[in-house]
Length: 178
Figure 1 (cartoon, rainbow, N blue to C red):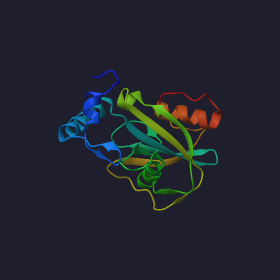
Figure 2 (figure 1 turned 120 degrees about the horizontal axis):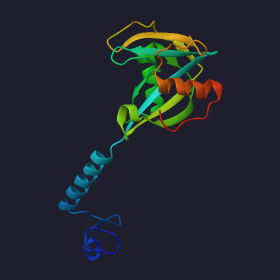
Figure 3 (figure 1 turned 90 degrees about the vertical axis):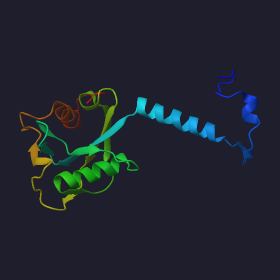
Figure 4 (figure 1 turned 30 degrees about the horizontal axis):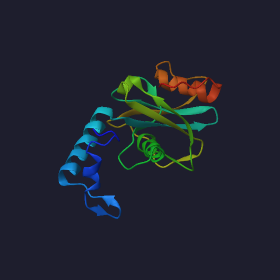
């Protein structure tokens, strides 16, 4: 590495043909750059998930998966090219049949060590406006979908979900982690 932080000597960079004032990289430099960026992406890859909190008065909509225990907010992963907000809206309708309306409130972004060690983050969005697009029907992923008053939550609610409900409804201090 040269003294100015480049991997190639400055003279070598300056001697490259230019395109619009930007040095054109050789095929080797393009390959090496792509390889480096790929290695960094694999090593430092983060995943982003979302949870949609649908609130009706003092009740919250929860789902029970077929493959993990407990009651959770509807949610899932953010797909490439999708915003976190759009992913939360998509997951809400896919998992519950409720179509959200309007812009949500971002409750927070939480590190989820339970699911992803050091690399998984979950964005939690709140909606108070929505409509039933279709009736819920149990499927291969979601066993149940029910409204619960916040003072009568199920005993087997997932702990991170319970903490978010305390933050939202009881004003508990927001945590950094799920």
